[in-house]
Amino acid sequence: MSSPSPIWLFALLVMSSAYATETIWLDQFTDTSGKVPAPWQVVQLDKKISPTDYRLIRWDGVNAIEASADKSMALLARPVEVDLMQTPVMCWRWRVDAPLVKADMATKAGDDYAARVYVSFAMPEDEIGFFLSTKLALARSIYGDAVPDAALNYVWDNKYPVGTHKPNAYTDRTRMIVSESGSENAGKWVVARHDIQQDLEAEFESKLAKMVQLSVASDTDNTGESARAGFADFHFVARDAPCHTF
Picture: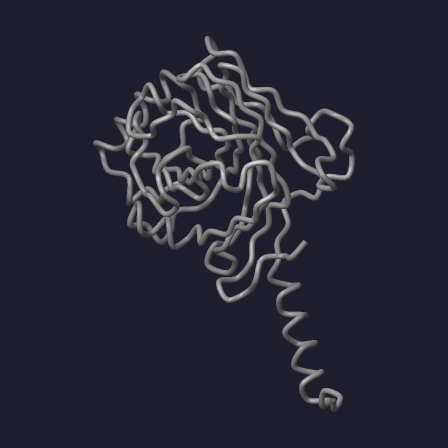
């Protein structure tokens, strides 16, 4: 077999360099001995509900956030500043021990997920009219400043097919997108890839909203179930670039 030509080798080096510069990593945890470090912090939207427990562990060879939920809900959140026009695709790895049994995203009583990745946005002022501004102010008076202008939730559901899009059962300012479903991939790490900018435009008709926060959660307060999930390797790439391979 003939060796690759110098031109092809040069092209491969250029492509590799381009992909490297287009990869924006959020966290690659090195200390997996326990507490998740800043800027991550636990956010309780409802203080009456027990918070999900979060810690850093080494899980099947992966440095990860472990979320353990028992009739509980809280987000583990961190601020994010990323140019979605340049790197609109978010990649990550996640896993669940098992999907929930009683969850149903179409109802408030079933609005639980073994794993969810929550992307929050700040909308431009000219896209927030009086009605929406009033609606958001009311929500923040109840749940605090953690309520975003808009949000996308990528969830590991129990029954709806991958690709399902629905408004959240509590608020249409959060849109649910089924990224994984069922138990086929439970018990192993799965790579997820979603075009955040494309989903933002499709769900909220906004090109200029800015991503301001990334959160993860295992959420079981409505169904009263227990769940365990893992999250790792969040990074952003250009639309035509691959996710980092592991």
